[in-house]
Structure formats: C-alpha cells, structure tokens
Amino acid sequence: MLIGVVGKPSVGKSTFFKAATLAEAEIAPYPFTTIKPNSGVGYAKIDCVDAFFNKQCNPRDGYCLHHKRFVPVQMLDVAGLVPGAHEGKGMGNQFLDDLRQADVLIHVIDVAGSTNEKGENVEPGSYDPAEDIKFLEVELDMWYLGIIKKGWEKFVRTVMQEKGKVAFAITKQLSGLKVRQEMVEEVIEKLDLVPEHLSSWSEDQLKQMAVHLRKKTKPMVIACNKIDMVSGESNFQRLKKMFPDYLMIPCSSERDVE
Ligand SMILES: Nc1nc2c(ncn2[C@@H]2O[C@H](COP(=O)(O)OP(=O)(O)OP(=O)(O)O)[C@@H](O)[C@H]2O)c(=O)[nH]1
Ligand SMILES: [Mg+2]
Image (tube, rainbow, N blue to C red; front, side):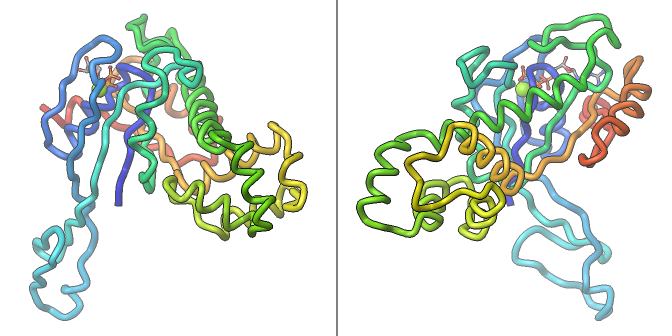
C-alpha cells in the first residue's frame, strides 16, 4: 500500500509526513522546501483478530500490541504543485510520476488560508482554500491526460493495424498507474466511445477518460491542515459543505511533530 502526499507548496505536506512516519523531512515556511521526494513508513492502527482467539499474534508485516494491529503503510511526500504545473509552472508536474503506483492520495490543504496559490505566506483567512481543492483536481487530471496522450498517434496506428482489443491495449499502456482492464471497459461504455473509431476519439473524450481513471485509481482524502490557526475551524465547516463527496479530516500536523 502506497499513499502519496500531495498539495500546493507550504501547506505542511512534509510536516504531515513527518508526524505520520517519524521519518526525517525538511520543513520550512517558504515554497518548494521539498524537491526530492521523502519516503517513509507509517502504521495504520486497527483491531486485531487475535483478541477473538485470546492469543497474541506475531505478524510478518508490522506488529501487534494489546490486540491492536499496526499495519505498515508506505508514504511518499513530494514537491508542491501550483496551478498550471502541467504547463511547467512552479516545479512542473514531472515529480508526480513518482506517485504512479500510489493506491491513495492524501491532499494536504492549508485550511486556514494562510498561504496563497503559490504557497507564499499571506494574512490567515485571506485566501480561500476551496481554490486549492479545485486546482489540484485539474492538475492531477492533466497529469493523467499527458500520460494517455504520450505517443497516442503511434499507439492508435499499432492497435488499429493489429486489430487488437482496444481496452486491453489501453490498460497495458496505463498499467503503471494501476489502471485495470475493467476500469477501461467501464469508461469506454460510460463515454459511448466506439473502439473501432479509436483514431477519431476527441481530445475532450480523452480528457474525460483521464478524469474517470484518475478518480478510480487515485482516490483522495483531504487533510485540512493548520486547523489550529485563526479561520481554520470556520473554513473547515464551510469546505465540508462545499465538497460533500470528499472525506475531509481536520489536523494540525505541526502539533503532532512536536
Ligand atoms: N500553524 C501550523 N503551521 C504548520 C502546520 N503544519 C505545517 N506548518 C508550517 O507550515 C510551513 C510549511 O510546512 P512544510 O511541511 O515545509 O510544507 P510543505 O507542504 O511540505 O512545503 P513544500 O515542501 O515547500 O511544498 C512550516 O513553517 C510549518 O512549520 C500546522 O498544522 N499548523
Ligand atoms: Mg515539503
């Protein structure tokens, strides 16, 4: 299990990562502190079945304490993303490729709105973190679209010549992102795409495919960080209503690190 930690610069991704894994990571109040990804292991605490058998288990992975199982989870903290990263803004979006194999993403936001869209410090409460939830989705979708479109024309020619199964070929192309064939079949059906007309699938249809596959393969929860700051709590309540489809969890990573 690999969790990717994403978000714009200076929201506290590395602070969150450090609190979750106790691994070393550089933390600083300016954008792009992290450039090379930080990798570590955190533990998810769940009830262990050994309580039922009234025994102490000895798991191969992780460990068990007083009938609580600590399941190891790999975590990767990457550089910050800014709006337009897919066009090269900020650090670009190349570093997202480290997250291709991620099973889940945690989007860390500065819920207090104390940093602008570039991650620069501003008056707490003066920036609306709702913007960050929206722009990050766009950047992730553009990342997927970029991977789908890479070598697309050559890919189309080969698949058409070999009269190959379209869903199978697309799955193979995207397997690095954890895309499975049934997901591709589902999106082809949902978007009414005709496999025989692969060469005329439009840019917009490919974009919709990217959105669908991104949501399927990289489910995301939102860590509403810096809840300790002024405006944190009121923004959190507002964002929860604005984005009912997301699981939003308030946190103060800095406090957990100390
Ligand atoms: N008040 C408060 N400050 C926090 C919290 N978490 C992080 N910070 C501060 O926010 C600043 C940025 O933290 P980082 O962890 O370096 O942020 P990042 O998202 O990894 O930033 P980049 O690596 O530049 O993308 C630091 O000054 C932290 O001390 C929090 O929960 N509350
Ligand atoms: Mg960082």
